[in-house]
Length: 171
View: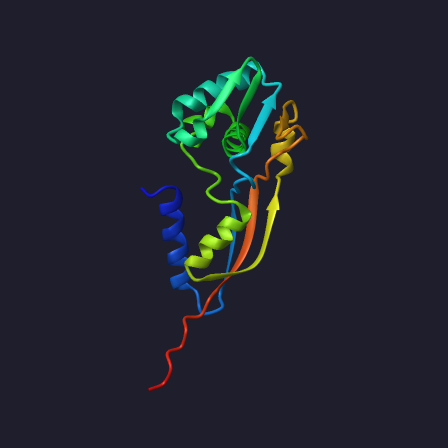
């Protein structure tokens, strides 16, 4: 079973093969925060959130995403690691046996576009979206990055067009 970047590469390659030249591909996927290595903090974790955090660390196979530090009811880490944990937390601890294994954010908005470009797609449109339900589910938390309130975008939306292969010159 392919996961992460390998699964994405296979999926995009297969879609490209099935599309006509200039065919369109619309993708809605998780989105890595801009400046993913900058620090972020989460304050106000409940007792249940703290339990979920420990379960998440135990289950997640992604070392960079487990680079989170808990002190009391506060969590710190990179924007990427914090955003991945928050996305997982919104699914509920009962889903952690499956959801903690996932990677929701392989690329930033621009990074996804660049990656698809290497596979023969041209970007027509992209947008970052924060699902209201995620914000509502985590409303009891204070999330910051460099002091101002911050909440990571939860999804990206991309519209790509299959780039035609160059036509070889006639002999």
